[in-house]
Length: 212
Image 1 (cartoon, rainbow, N blue to C red):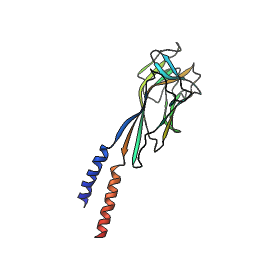
Image 2 (cartoon, rainbow, N blue to C red):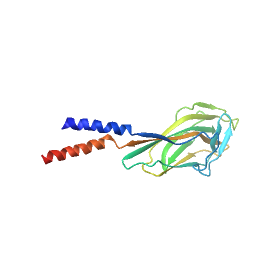
Image 3 (cartoon, rainbow, N blue to C red):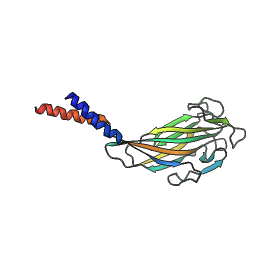
Image 4 (cartoon, helix red, strand yellow):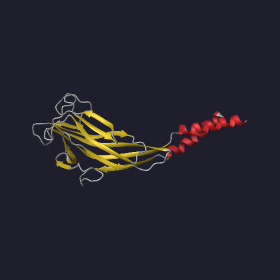
């Protein structure tokens, strides 16, 4: 009986793995403009070399939201998302010393909270891909570019996701600000774990033994 269960479990898990689906929910590099919706009314574009078009720039007290409908899934499926984007930290970011943080909230849950610095202070996130260096705006301040920041998240069975791009600890926009670019959201829909099938098979085997 044990060998039979193992063989059946292998037969069950193979088609389940093959049925996983991947797709892209959203993508925009903003070179052709800003789509509203799904971006909220607070979003706007800025163009400044070498940044090209990006969403922002935002300073203290400013945030924006990306609001999207999610793919329809069955009760026995799960869906996982990956948000990928570029972050521009502009002018005077002071890292952990100044409590300068960039945040992402998905349906109210914080999924990203990292400090950034352009002045050499300590920060919690990795080093930038470009900078710190003077890239534009205030000629007396440094800027930095972070490419392809990847943030995985799960929205359960929610029909919508609202991702808020925000910051804390910054000054006014002409002192310290930020923008985002090349925003992409991919997803993978997976069937229920094969373990669920194993439990069902084990239960069926137990019933068969009891009937004998």
